[in-house]
Amino acid sequence: MSDAALHAEAEALLRRRLAAAGICLERLPEVALGYAMLLPGARMRVAKVLPRKGPHPRGRTGAMGMHWMLRSDVEDFVVLADTGRELVWLLPAMEFRRLASPQRGGRWHLDWFVVRTGASRLPDEGDMDEYRIEKALERLLEEEKARHDAP
Image (cartoon, rainbow, N blue to C red):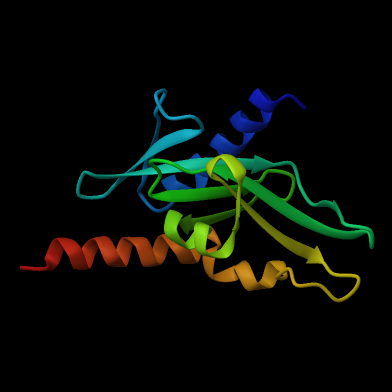
């Protein structure tokens, strides 16, 4: 599958998940991999979408895992889309960078195991449950409502 097809698949998956929460998604051509999430109340948040087709072997043990590489700049959120399993995670950009390892050139690398076969310093996918899009959107919309309702 080409990168363009994978990105289109991830965009469609994300659009479906956001629409269920009343959030629109618009491309931002000036931001690589960037989209505007249009929240209720006309607030906009910039999200970068990082797609993968699914887990793949990690390291020498054959453990299955996911990894994500972000060149960080203007995003408010990072969307991790596993199109093969139709799973989506939504992380505030600061949280992504806190969990990830810094790399040369201003990049950040986030790695986890889906199925662990031995001891490792990497987290398990279950450790990322709080960022699954359903939970993350619920928190985001609550925060936006509180911000809107504040005097």
